[in-house]
Image (tube, rainbow, N blue to C red; front, side, top):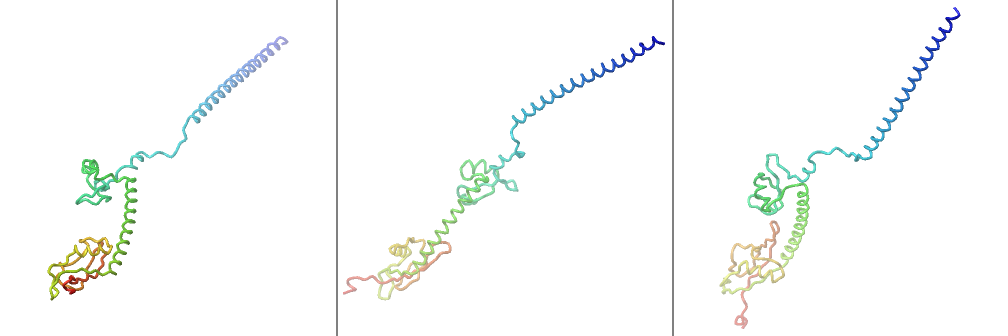
Length: 234
């Protein structure tokens, strides 16, 4: 019986030793795993930092074709292309007009010949500025013509002509002579501005219409008097 105790003690000690050894090995494995995990974490963090430093700041998502569409010519619904005329074209429009033509006519003739340009957004803005300037100039021109019409209406002209005793002219007074008389008074009037139904062939007082613009007209009084000669004075 006394000899069995050492065997039991040795068995217990052996088991305890095994437990301690296994526990130590477990702790060693855990430490190794922890170190490898920390190393991986550091490497991952460094790579992430490197990626973060090298990466460009992200902006809003880029829409495909935006740059191309900004200067792309406007296209009508029926397949025609919109152009801005740079010169007046018979049966098509005036310079600065926005017109719709077939793509082939635009690309093969109008644009290469310099008769039109594509109706891009930038070109449309330029045309609108030009139109605004033209409107301002037209308004100023009409104001000047209205002032001129008022001044002409306050004047009267006198033209001498040879006539017989009954007052019939040997010649006639035409629009060229009336325009010349107005220019002598300082008015920039041409023969095409004078409106008379025909040459004047009688002495007397006439009311002559003067056309200055589409809806700007005036009238001037014209006296046609006999020519004074030295014999008549004697």
